Length: 267
Image (tube, helix red, strand yellow):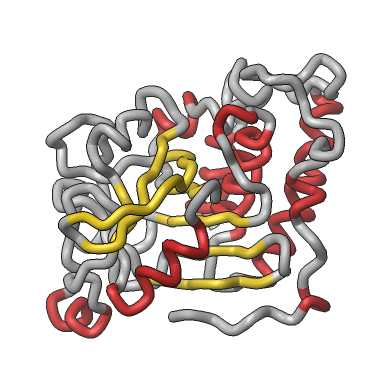
Protein backbone atom coordinates (compact mmCIF):
# COMPACT_ATOMS: atom_id res chain seq x y z
CA UNK A 1 0.00 0.00 0.00
CA UNK A 2 1.22 3.47 -0.79
CA UNK A 3 1.17 5.49 2.42
CA UNK A 4 0.47 9.17 2.94
CA UNK A 5 3.22 11.44 4.30
CA UNK A 6 4.08 11.04 7.96
CA UNK A 7 3.68 14.19 9.99
CA UNK A 8 7.03 15.89 10.43
CA UNK A 9 6.43 16.22 14.15
CA UNK A 10 6.64 12.44 14.52
CA UNK A 11 9.98 12.17 12.84
CA UNK A 12 13.16 14.21 13.31
CA UNK A 13 15.55 14.44 10.38
CA UNK A 14 17.44 11.14 9.99
CA UNK A 15 19.96 12.01 7.33
CA UNK A 16 22.26 14.06 9.63
CA UNK A 17 22.42 11.16 12.07
CA UNK A 18 23.14 8.60 9.37
CA UNK A 19 25.72 10.80 7.70
CA UNK A 20 27.55 12.78 10.37
CA UNK A 21 30.48 13.35 8.03
CA UNK A 22 28.63 14.64 4.96
CA UNK A 23 29.82 18.19 5.47
CA UNK A 24 33.41 16.88 5.52
CA UNK A 25 33.34 13.67 3.48
CA UNK A 26 35.55 10.85 4.65
CA UNK A 27 38.43 9.81 2.41
CA UNK A 28 37.76 7.00 -0.04
CA UNK A 29 38.55 3.78 1.78
CA UNK A 30 36.97 0.53 2.96
CA UNK A 31 37.12 1.21 6.70
CA UNK A 32 36.34 4.15 8.95
CA UNK A 33 38.86 7.02 8.76
CA UNK A 34 41.48 7.11 11.55
CA UNK A 35 39.88 10.23 13.04
CA UNK A 36 36.69 8.32 13.82
CA UNK A 37 36.40 6.52 17.18
CA UNK A 38 37.22 2.83 16.63
CA UNK A 39 33.96 0.94 16.75
CA UNK A 40 35.74 -2.19 17.92
CA UNK A 41 36.48 -0.48 21.26
CA UNK A 42 33.92 -0.66 24.05
CA UNK A 43 33.51 3.13 24.13
CA UNK A 44 33.18 3.36 20.37
CA UNK A 45 30.58 0.59 20.27
CA UNK A 46 28.59 2.26 23.05
CA UNK A 47 28.49 5.64 21.31
CA UNK A 48 27.60 4.14 17.95
CA UNK A 49 24.92 1.94 19.51
CA UNK A 50 23.30 4.96 21.16
CA UNK A 51 23.15 6.75 17.83
CA UNK A 52 21.66 3.69 16.13
CA UNK A 53 19.02 3.47 18.85
CA UNK A 54 17.91 7.04 18.12
CA UNK A 55 17.76 6.40 14.38
CA UNK A 56 15.88 3.13 14.88
CA UNK A 57 13.28 4.79 17.09
CA UNK A 58 12.50 7.37 14.43
CA UNK A 59 12.31 4.81 11.64
CA UNK A 60 10.08 2.60 13.78
CA UNK A 61 7.76 5.53 14.51
CA UNK A 62 7.31 5.96 10.76
CA UNK A 63 6.90 2.21 10.05
CA UNK A 64 5.46 0.57 13.19
CA UNK A 65 4.86 -2.73 11.39
CA UNK A 66 8.56 -3.16 10.65
CA UNK A 67 10.95 -4.91 13.04
CA UNK A 68 12.99 -2.34 15.01
CA UNK A 69 15.95 -4.72 15.02
CA UNK A 70 15.88 -4.99 11.22
CA UNK A 71 15.60 -1.22 10.91
CA UNK A 72 18.59 -0.86 13.21
CA UNK A 73 20.66 -3.19 11.04
CA UNK A 74 19.58 -1.26 7.94
CA UNK A 75 20.70 2.02 9.55
CA UNK A 76 24.03 0.46 10.53
CA UNK A 77 24.62 -0.87 7.02
CA UNK A 78 23.63 2.42 5.37
CA UNK A 79 25.95 4.36 7.65
CA UNK A 80 28.80 2.11 6.57
CA UNK A 81 27.90 2.34 2.87
CA UNK A 82 27.89 6.15 3.05
CA UNK A 83 31.51 6.05 4.21
CA UNK A 84 32.41 4.48 0.87
CA UNK A 85 31.77 7.14 -1.81
CA UNK A 86 32.41 4.62 -4.59
CA UNK A 87 29.15 2.88 -3.64
CA UNK A 88 27.20 5.89 -4.93
CA UNK A 89 24.65 5.90 -2.10
CA UNK A 90 22.24 8.83 -1.80
CA UNK A 91 21.61 9.69 1.88
CA UNK A 92 18.11 11.01 1.19
CA UNK A 93 16.34 7.63 0.80
CA UNK A 94 16.38 4.16 2.36
CA UNK A 95 14.72 0.91 1.27
CA UNK A 96 14.32 -2.07 3.60
CA UNK A 97 13.17 -5.61 2.74
CA UNK A 98 12.60 -8.12 5.53
CA UNK A 99 12.68 -11.62 4.04
CA UNK A 100 12.14 -13.19 7.46
CA UNK A 101 8.47 -12.29 7.03
CA UNK A 102 6.06 -14.36 4.93
CA UNK A 103 5.40 -13.24 1.39
CA UNK A 104 1.71 -12.80 2.21
CA UNK A 105 2.59 -9.77 4.36
CA UNK A 106 3.96 -6.37 3.34
CA UNK A 107 7.71 -6.59 3.94
CA UNK A 108 9.27 -3.73 1.98
CA UNK A 109 9.51 -0.17 3.26
CA UNK A 110 10.80 2.92 1.47
CA UNK A 111 11.71 5.97 3.55
CA UNK A 112 12.24 9.52 2.32
CA UNK A 113 14.76 10.69 4.90
CA UNK A 114 15.04 14.19 3.48
CA UNK A 115 11.31 14.99 3.65
CA UNK A 116 10.56 12.92 6.74
CA UNK A 117 8.10 10.53 5.07
CA UNK A 118 7.39 6.85 4.75
CA UNK A 119 6.69 6.44 1.04
CA UNK A 120 5.80 2.77 0.64
CA UNK A 121 4.94 -0.32 2.64
CA UNK A 122 4.68 -3.07 0.05
CA UNK A 123 4.54 -6.76 -0.77
CA UNK A 124 7.63 -8.11 -2.50
CA UNK A 125 8.37 -11.48 -4.10
CA UNK A 126 11.39 -13.69 -3.52
CA UNK A 127 13.16 -16.18 -5.78
CA UNK A 128 11.33 -19.44 -6.50
CA UNK A 129 14.18 -21.56 -5.10
CA UNK A 130 14.41 -19.53 -1.89
CA UNK A 131 11.25 -21.02 -0.42
CA UNK A 132 7.46 -21.02 -0.59
CA UNK A 133 5.68 -18.48 1.59
CA UNK A 134 8.71 -18.28 3.87
CA UNK A 135 12.25 -17.97 2.58
CA UNK A 136 14.94 -20.37 3.73
CA UNK A 137 17.71 -20.33 1.11
CA UNK A 138 19.70 -17.53 -0.51
CA UNK A 139 22.36 -17.40 -3.18
CA UNK A 140 24.69 -15.13 -5.12
CA UNK A 141 25.07 -17.70 -7.90
CA UNK A 142 23.92 -17.29 -11.49
CA UNK A 143 21.10 -19.70 -12.31
CA UNK A 144 20.19 -20.37 -8.68
CA UNK A 145 16.83 -18.56 -8.97
CA UNK A 146 17.29 -17.54 -5.36
CA UNK A 147 17.12 -14.20 -3.59
CA UNK A 148 20.31 -12.46 -2.45
CA UNK A 149 20.80 -10.75 0.90
CA UNK A 150 22.62 -7.61 1.96
CA UNK A 151 23.06 -4.01 0.92
CA UNK A 152 22.49 -2.78 -2.62
CA UNK A 153 22.67 0.54 -4.43
CA UNK A 154 19.64 1.18 -6.64
CA UNK A 155 21.02 2.35 -9.96
CA UNK A 156 19.58 3.04 -13.42
CA UNK A 157 16.21 2.13 -14.90
CA UNK A 158 15.50 0.43 -18.23
CA UNK A 159 12.67 -1.17 -20.19
CA UNK A 160 13.00 -4.95 -20.34
CA UNK A 161 10.99 -8.13 -20.55
CA UNK A 162 9.28 -7.27 -17.27
CA UNK A 163 8.62 -3.66 -18.25
CA UNK A 164 10.04 -0.72 -16.34
CA UNK A 165 12.84 -2.12 -14.19
CA UNK A 166 15.59 -0.94 -11.83
CA UNK A 167 19.09 -2.38 -11.75
CA UNK A 168 20.68 -3.15 -8.38
CA UNK A 169 24.37 -3.13 -7.57
CA UNK A 170 25.26 -5.60 -4.82
CA UNK A 171 27.75 -4.19 -2.32
CA UNK A 172 28.65 -7.36 -0.44
CA UNK A 173 31.22 -9.75 -1.96
CA UNK A 174 30.14 -13.35 -1.78
CA UNK A 175 26.55 -12.49 -0.92
CA UNK A 176 25.13 -10.20 -3.61
CA UNK A 177 27.96 -8.78 -5.73
CA UNK A 178 26.76 -10.80 -8.75
CA UNK A 179 23.41 -9.00 -8.78
CA UNK A 180 24.00 -7.11 -12.03
CA UNK A 181 25.38 -10.17 -13.80
CA UNK A 182 22.34 -12.14 -12.60
CA UNK A 183 19.98 -9.36 -13.70
CA UNK A 184 18.57 -9.05 -10.18
CA UNK A 185 16.33 -6.02 -10.59
CA UNK A 186 13.22 -4.48 -9.09
CA UNK A 187 10.27 -4.75 -11.47
CA UNK A 188 6.52 -5.12 -11.44
CA UNK A 189 4.96 -8.57 -11.83
CA UNK A 190 1.32 -9.73 -11.93
CA UNK A 191 2.14 -12.66 -9.64
CA UNK A 192 2.74 -10.14 -6.82
CA UNK A 193 -0.95 -10.17 -5.98
CA UNK A 194 -1.94 -10.08 -2.28
CA UNK A 195 -5.50 -11.23 -3.02
CA UNK A 196 -4.31 -14.32 -4.88
CA UNK A 197 -1.70 -14.92 -2.20
CA UNK A 198 -4.43 -15.31 0.42
CA UNK A 199 -6.02 -18.06 -1.68
CA UNK A 200 -2.84 -19.96 -2.56
CA UNK A 201 -0.92 -19.34 0.65
CA UNK A 202 1.94 -17.34 -0.87
CA UNK A 203 2.80 -14.74 -3.47
CA UNK A 204 4.01 -15.83 -6.84
CA UNK A 205 7.78 -16.13 -7.02
CA UNK A 206 10.45 -14.60 -9.22
CA UNK A 207 13.76 -15.87 -10.63
CA UNK A 208 15.52 -14.06 -7.79
CA UNK A 209 14.28 -10.51 -8.27
CA UNK A 210 12.48 -8.47 -5.59
CA UNK A 211 9.39 -8.03 -7.74
CA UNK A 212 6.55 -5.74 -6.62
CA UNK A 213 2.92 -5.09 -7.56
CA UNK A 214 2.53 -3.70 -11.11
CA UNK A 215 0.23 -0.96 -9.79
CA UNK A 216 3.04 0.62 -7.75
CA UNK A 217 6.13 -0.51 -9.67
CA UNK A 218 6.89 2.66 -11.63
CA UNK A 219 6.23 5.02 -8.74
CA UNK A 220 8.25 2.90 -6.30
CA UNK A 221 11.13 2.48 -8.74
CA UNK A 222 11.27 6.20 -9.47
CA UNK A 223 11.35 6.93 -5.74
CA UNK A 224 14.55 4.92 -5.20
CA UNK A 225 16.42 5.05 -8.52
CA UNK A 226 19.87 6.65 -8.84
CA UNK A 227 21.44 5.90 -5.49
CA UNK A 228 19.02 4.71 -2.80
CA UNK A 229 20.48 2.18 -0.36
CA UNK A 230 18.34 -0.98 -0.35
CA UNK A 231 18.83 -3.41 2.54
CA UNK A 232 17.60 -7.01 2.15
CA UNK A 233 17.48 -8.88 5.47
CA UNK A 234 17.15 -12.44 6.71
CA UNK A 235 18.70 -13.90 9.92
CA UNK A 236 21.30 -15.85 7.95
CA UNK A 237 24.21 -16.51 10.33
CA UNK A 238 26.91 -16.58 7.68
CA UNK A 239 25.86 -13.24 6.20
CA UNK A 240 25.37 -11.59 9.60
CA UNK A 241 28.83 -12.66 10.71
CA UNK A 242 30.68 -11.75 7.50
CA UNK A 243 28.80 -8.82 5.98
CA UNK A 244 31.20 -6.01 5.05
CA UNK A 245 28.49 -3.47 5.92
CA UNK A 246 27.58 -4.86 9.34
CA UNK A 247 31.01 -5.50 10.81
CA UNK A 248 32.07 -3.63 13.90
CA UNK A 249 34.50 -1.36 12.07
CA UNK A 250 32.66 -1.09 8.76
CA UNK A 251 34.54 -3.63 6.71
CA UNK A 252 37.53 -4.68 8.73
CA UNK A 253 36.43 -6.67 11.75
CA UNK A 254 34.07 -9.11 13.38
CA UNK A 255 30.41 -8.31 12.89
CA UNK A 256 28.20 -7.03 15.68
CA UNK A 257 25.06 -7.74 13.70
CA UNK A 258 24.45 -11.32 14.81
CA UNK A 259 23.69 -10.24 18.38
CA UNK A 260 21.21 -7.61 17.24
CA UNK A 261 19.51 -10.06 14.90
CA UNK A 262 19.28 -12.78 17.53
CA UNK A 263 17.41 -10.33 19.76
CA UNK A 264 14.82 -9.88 17.01
CA UNK A 265 14.05 -13.59 16.93
CA UNK A 266 14.12 -14.23 20.66
CA UNK A 267 11.50 -11.60 21.39
